[in-house]
Length: 127
Image (cartoon, rainbow, N blue to C red; front, top):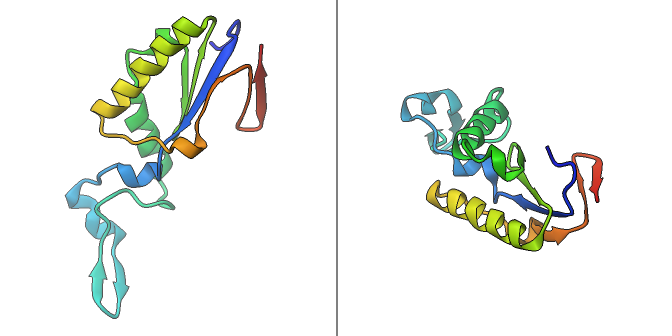
């Protein structure tokens, strides 16, 4: 899907799982007993057995219909690829609008834009 691309951008969501609201009826499953009483998560915590799959499903839903944009997403890491700068800027704008409409926030310090080579999940992608 990314082959033939000359420009790559990566985005990482800020505390990805914590941006996903949990179903209130499932909160009791995340209870932690403390000296202050029972505490329950309202947002998806890290470490739950199905947390990764649940968050990936959210991202698949959010980015559904954008497969023609050469976007790859694994959990909270997004790669955008294109052949030209103009095409890349358009794709970035579309992806950021999608994330904004889904109320998902990106961590700027973990983003890189218009790169000719990136490393993602241990693999190096380059032109």
